[in-house]
Image 1 (cartoon, rainbow, N blue to C red):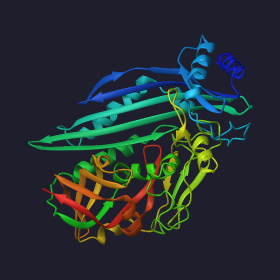
Image 2 (tube, helix red, strand yellow):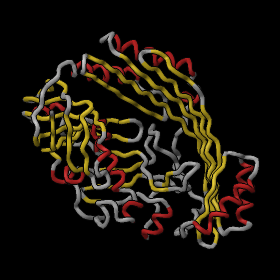
Image 3 (tube, rainbow, N blue to C red):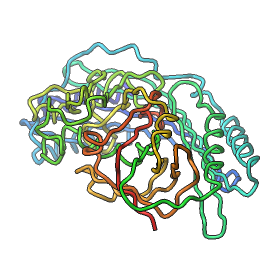
Image 4 (cartoon, rainbow, N blue to C red):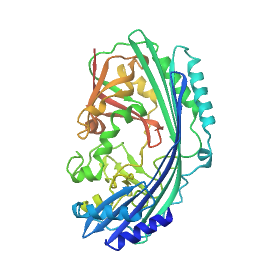
Length: 438
């Protein structure tokens, strides 16, 4: 790989002003169970190199999975450069990177047999609660190497690991279909399998009874997973520097303005231990960091890569996201929402009639960029006089992310929980959202 990257850069610099080579090697081993049985296991490998050049001030890009012909890659990138966007940046020189531990031999050396055993054990524990349950489990191990080199001496390399587990249970009772699922990811060690089992079993138990709920405006609590499935995408688009530049984000022009509840604090962090979204540098070799996005209710920053930062007259925040087949663009690392001072028990006690939302479907179908959401409550529970009294069916929750987080936030949970490996968020309680039930 080193010899190929050197050859690519040397060839590109004979005909272009600047160049960058991005190499990506990943080995992924997924193990999948369906309907209580092992379905598939395999190992997939992805390997390739992407080349970005600047010629006559314009960007050319090409990628390949063939590592035997560097000249073909160079020719392809230079061929499209005249039609590329005008470069608004310079490649970064050599940088100092944080000493981030992103690789764990425990994950790298994990055998398929171990993953199969863990999957079977989780399924058996869930079905102890009810043998009629159909249980799915997906476990995955990934080992990745990233290398970046550019023509001004910048770049670096790192190895990282990721382990993920998804556990889902399905129960059919006549026309009533119940689906419950949980997932976890980590870059260090293995996930807490027992915690996944407990979470699924507890939510199945809470769903044993159905509870009718009225249509109207009412208090709503989102679990961390419920928030991720319903509101997160709007915020990620809103803080994307490219969307801000295009004027598509509702946050465009609001830097430094009070736009959110003063208690709501949000950070993007690429250096969180154990997060699968962490790395010492981003997809362009810019050091990753912690960036305050919302503090004291004001918009404090947007996420930029080099190109969008150049257009905005700003600095890259170390948020370039890329693949072998695409140019870099702004993307999030781990998102962290600071906990507040309310326990979930206190939130529930404060509600006479309301809704707790844990899973939604189709919330993305509305005007996501504008912050609108209207999602089916895939898993939610009615709150009655401070207690969870049963699962709701045929129910929707609607609202606007920005309105809810500015004027409608009632309480923030005192404990933040990981959702997957890239979001840590507490329970959030809103004063009044739209709830519609058949």
